[in-house]
Length: 102
Image (cartoon, rainbow, N blue to C red; front, side, top):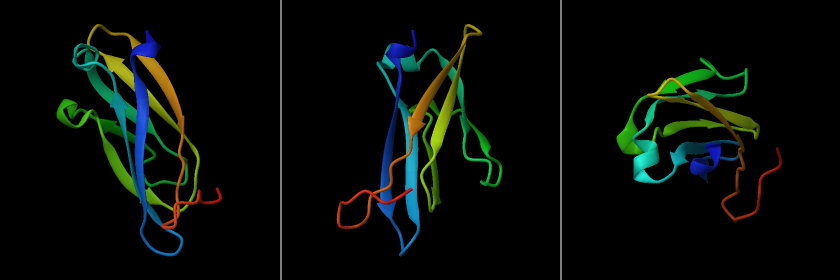
């Protein structure tokens, strides 16, 4: 069932050593409609490292920023009571298109 969903990301360098970034859930509309909310688990150095997003219209998009890469966990809580964990290794790219060092 977890193959129905994937985590996608967007990132943009916003200063010498800072990036704005976002993650969201991709899937067919019928599959996304089954999600009640997503708990995003960020690196422990973030303020409030567990963020709950209920906005289906944005595909449960989380927008934030930071300076380094890490593994993000997306815990999908389905309306039928099931939970699905997805993992995504955040990648940050410099303004010149090269990948930033983690």
